[in-house]
Length: 180
Image (cartoon, rainbow, N blue to C red):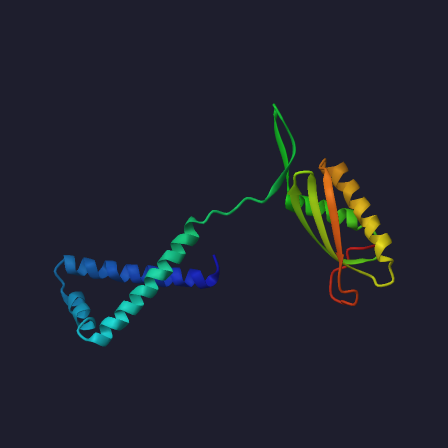
């Protein structure tokens, strides 16, 4: 949960604590909390301000409740094998690691960002990469496609339907070196 929402949750809990303490005071016969409440609602301006604060608290409460009940989605996975004895799956982040290892075998790559999805005929792989400008783009792309396909099929046991490559920003100095 982000720090902003944690702070909102702390403030919200303090308000609930204040309301509970006021209720306990009134239950044991101390009437000061009731006089404070009457003073707040005595004028039109105070009622408008109290209504605005109540609306804000209501919205924050609904957002926090939504965050508490939101389930964390498991990592997307692809089924490698399924038979009567069970099922074997591999996560998309694991496939990306395999792709990164395969790409390290190709010299001249500055940076690569893989995107992996599963299609009816196998994996659809999209590689967004930066390469050294001295390299031949068609030869390098073909080499990368064949190496990645071979690695995925050999190591993960998955069929690769398509590998698309986008070569971008030859002159970018920033970016980690994933080549040799």
